Amino acid sequence: MKKVIKVEDPKMSIFLLQPSRPIFCTTKNEDGSDHAAPFGWLMPISFNPPRVALSLQNERGQKYSSSLKNAMREREFVVNVPKMGMEFPLVQSSYMLENHSCKFDRLGSARIDSQLVKPKKIADCVAFLECKVYDIIDDGKGDHTTLLADIVYADFEEGCYDEMMCPVISKFKPILSLKEYRHPDHQTHVFLDPATEYEVVVPYEKPLS
Image (tube, rainbow, N blue to C red; front, side, top):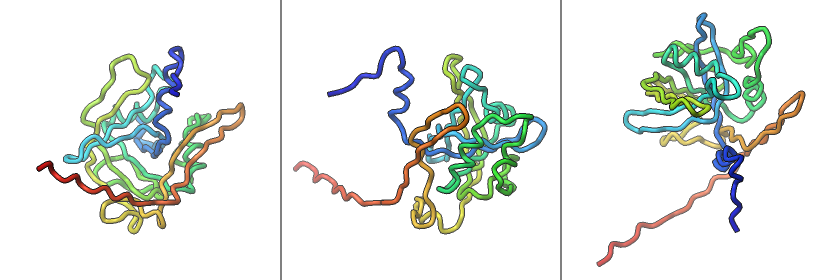
């Protein structure tokens, strides 16, 4: 029996797509300082040329993402792929900070220079996509704005990916975010452990004679 999501709360339908795979997005603030924040709405949209879409909260959302402001102004950002063990700084860097503190500094990770864009990379991450924005999608209604970007440079930690660019689970487990609970003085986040991989062999159908 199917259960229908209530019409008065349609936004809950988005969570049917969980788990998400959060990443760190690094950008440059207007004063030239470094900014970092986690996001889960990233997807590939083209193989050749390699392109991605990143949706970030705009002024119609609960908070206007500094990453969005920076990326729209500078037209570039870096996708930093975290590994299991980085859950605490991942969640903590989503919090609003007092006195305009630097979220990048709060991560406790060293900076790495990018090759073709200005934003820095987070040294503790395992893969990096340097991106240049070529288009911005915003219909004036939704609470997120989508950045369409070309991947202009990419690198990764040797041994963490195989020849098909798939994670080598024995070396690196991606973070998979399932759900979160918000309390007055903290948040509790639930993650999945991708501990097992398995194969499914699907033969081609024989053509009809």
